[in-house]
Length: 235
Image 1 (spheres, rainbow, N blue to C red):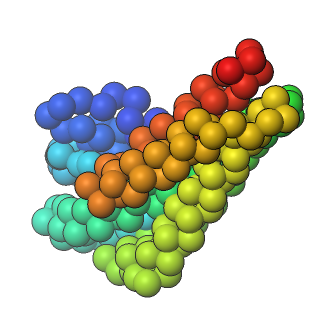
Image 2: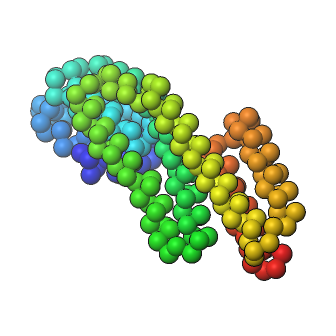
Image 3: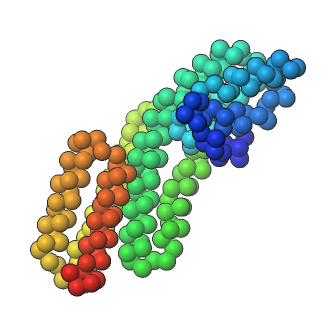
């Protein structure tokens, strides 16, 4: 199931969203828990219902659903577990992985690239995918063990702390990018300092307006690159 879970969004559609990918991931259980033609049809129908959550943390739902099937739960119970886990895990995964970890990984890669590090793209992949793979693998195990309570470890204060610190690291890294751009060419020019100050004001305003952290980080990285290039070209 772990390998199949990577294809969760491969047949994303506006009607059922991730339903086809979810059903595909559950297929190894079809002949084990779907008794007879009617049983298999019912199995496919309940796992082709609407489903949508963060694709990485969907493994928690998959593990819980598999455990319900193994326990012989009825269709209503299986569906309730899926729906009950999908929403909190979707919010948790989007905040942690897309709103915090991805901007941080991108900012680190940009900073390394500006320093001339040729393996900067690899750093992006490692920083993002190590936690991603750990959560995806752990999710199946925790989901199977905890069932409907599987989302507990990702919806408490620990998650909020992880998101807060990862976003802080992303902001710090963007600051380093901008600082690197300000001193490009060996001279500190007033207009560069003003540009950096303006960026932080805009970043603060964007945060107050709930602009996604990914866009703020990408904007900071782009501003740093522009400042650096203008410095290298003589301003």
